[in-house]
Length: 165
Image (cartoon, rainbow, N blue to C red):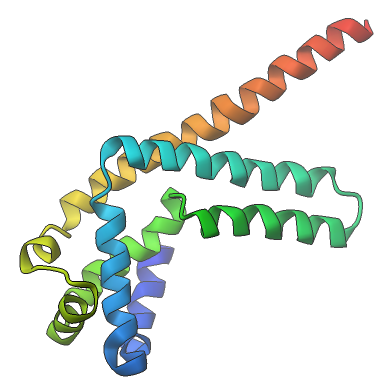
């Protein structure tokens, strides 16, 4: 609901009219890219993303001062954003924003001209493709956090605890 509310505010504010509507077209292009990832790509990208997100939480909790906490979070989250990995919560904004941007014909025209999108590609951005993408990315996020981070730490610290006793 929070993402929906922010998207509504951005849409109503005219923010996406920036640069003659180019920001609205970009929003549409990003949402289309996220919504049409193959299931394997969405799953793998979700796993990689949440490994970094969980790493940021670990660094933050292990840091003893505020500067360490801030920098630890900043660099790990920056890495997932720069790499373009998929996070279900972060995608909630862009997928909804893309559906809203699709409501303005001028954004569609700019997206066609600027990004070479076709009408068929733009039509493929719908609630169903957004939900499907969210499902695969969410499962990937869960696998990344539960298996690749939590389970490994559980095994390591369980062994260390046994060795200590």
